[in-house]
Each structure stands twice: as structure tokens, then as C-alpha cells.
Length: 185
Ligand SMILES: Cc1cc2nc3c(=O)[nH]c(=O)nc-3n(C[C@H](O)[C@H](O)[C@H](O)COP(=O)(O)O)c2cc1C
Image (cartoon, rainbow, N blue to C red):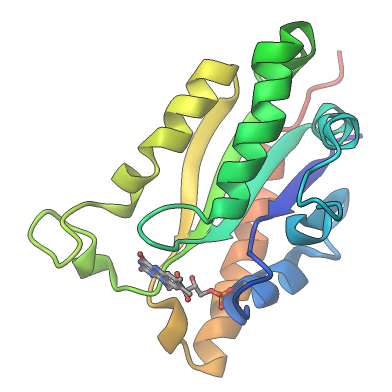
């Protein structure tokens, strides 16, 4: 038994074409669960700490999927970190310790082109560099960071290009599962 949990942090405040297509592409992969985190909030805009922690405990690997907004993951992911990771690693650290060594991978979509995300480009930094705070968070929380899966030019993809990106994502999630599969002793 080997379970991949994909948390989709696309905010409900903006429409989704690309992340929705990526989510559809992996929804039927074996042992894979994808969760729309915008729908996991209660009426006060809070996550259920115990339920969200249980999702993480039950998974063998975790994927954090989101669109880049304002050069960073969306506020929905920041809120999840502020609430759930605070609960797991500051309030109940013996619970957070249960996640030690669990593989984690970011899957991020960005509107701009790869050449914009260079030192000389319009954004001045590589997308991987903008993800350093998440990578540092993975290190602090004992999660095993894997190379991010990145989609550029997200707003300009033709239908064929979007289908190819969906296929590429499905292959990467399958590969991530194989690469991090637990070996039964
Ligand atoms: C409020 C907002 C801020 C954005 N900021 C960035 C940005 O800083 N860099 C970038 O490359 N794209 C940016 N984009 C484009 C999104 O990354 C792009 O629309 C998204 O990845 C496409 O996926 P979706 O169709 O699932 O929303 C932004 C989009 C919105 C709505």
C-alpha cells in the first residue's frame, strides 16, 4: 500500500484552467488522492487541524500543488502553513514528528516564461529560488524535499499544450510514487 496525497491550493477567489486540468489528469491514478484545499475551510476560513493532520499521517508522500501568485504560493497555502504546521510543529510537536522523512514535492504553475525567471530576466529570480521558503519549511519539518514540478507560460497554453502538460504531470506523479515507494521488508 503506497498512497500519494496531492493538496491543491488553488484559491477559490480566481478561476482555474491549468491547475484544474492537472488535477483531472491525476485524479484516477492508483492510490492517489487529490484534495481541493479551498473546499476544506470551515465557515470561519479555518482548516480542521485534526482532519488535516490525519490526511498527512495517512499519506506516504505529499504533493503541494498551486499557481504562483505575486511571486509566491497563494495565501491559501500560507494560511495552511500558519495554521496546520504551527499546530503540528509548535503546539503538538510529538504529532509533527510523525511526518519525519515523508517525501514532499511542489507542483507549481506560473504565468510567465522560463526566461523571465532568470537573474537577467524580468522577474530577477529562478522560480526554484522563489520556492526557497517552502524548501526551508520542509527542512524544518523533517520532510524529504524533491525537485519541484514546474509549468511555465500557464496562461498561454493552447489546448494541445495543456493536454501535454497534463500528461507530463501524470507521468511525474507516477514517477514520484515509484521513486519513493516503500519497500516491504
Ligand atoms: C493574482 C495573481 C497573481 C499572479 N502572479 C503571478 C506571478 O507573480 N508570476 C507568474 O509567473 N504568474 C503569476 N500569475 C499567473 C498565474 O500563475 C497563472 O494564472 C496560473 O498559474 C494559471 O493556473 P490556473 O489556470 O490554474 O489559475 C498570477 C495570477 C493571478 C491571478
